[in-house]
Length: 356
Image (cartoon, rainbow, N blue to C red; front, side, top):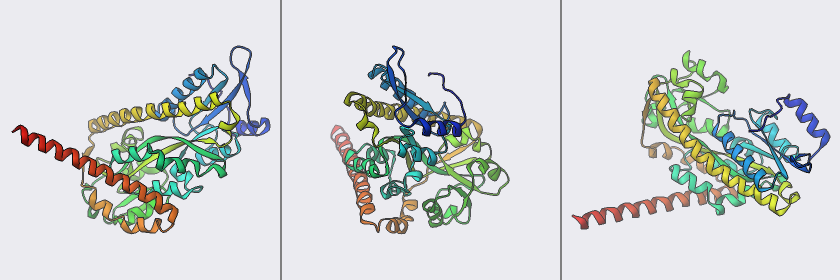
């Protein structure tokens, strides 16, 4: 990875606003290269950053250095919401944005953020890779100044607790569970009978340790990277949310570049997606193994009772016809996968019966 100048985000943002869009650097042959700035909030060891390094290498190679991709991790260009605003203006070219940030611009992203809308990882991945579902969503924010390029896996969020094992929704009754500051997430935990407790992520470890909260919800990486597994020993795969992060791009960028340069960015996005999915799965596996060595116990409850508690919440969020159309497509994909898997199982049983 090329050496990055670590200067103040505010100074850098001010400088970008002065020089405007389309800055150039040298490609090593004395020819001007168009700088492509990519911002995200993760550290250099995160699967998303590693995937973006692959994006950087691919785009620069395919354009013979005509595009100079520069990565800015750790919120160097501002917090996610601020970076998204800069992408709208073109001061930043690409940004990794959460669904929470994108909900303010397009209701379809709210649908993706609904708890228990996905039945399984298989369902989640097939939805995100379905052009019929995701294509219109990616394009829906063009008037806001950006469009979606691809998605990154941000894991499956589950509940983990300090004392009580969660096997059914009833086990959550009255428990204080840390939740992100989001109306959807608060309503989800209320529907499950828990007491949602919004809290800064940096305060969760102390909150668990001092019994200010009884648990939290996140993916396995939080057990290790943030050491929550030191105090919360019960991790239940209730699988309430499967949330992607979106790699979005300034709406005008691809039109301003040559067709070959634009295609390199599109193809680079696909490569980054594939790399990140594999890297994320490996990181999840490693985190779980380390958490087990730390003494964390993992449980696998039936998610159907949890999912059934979301009916009223889903109905509330699908009164909007456009949101309902997206919701119905996602649920139809789940039914399709269920039927397909049942057919496979029936065929397997039939073959085994004939063999016997």
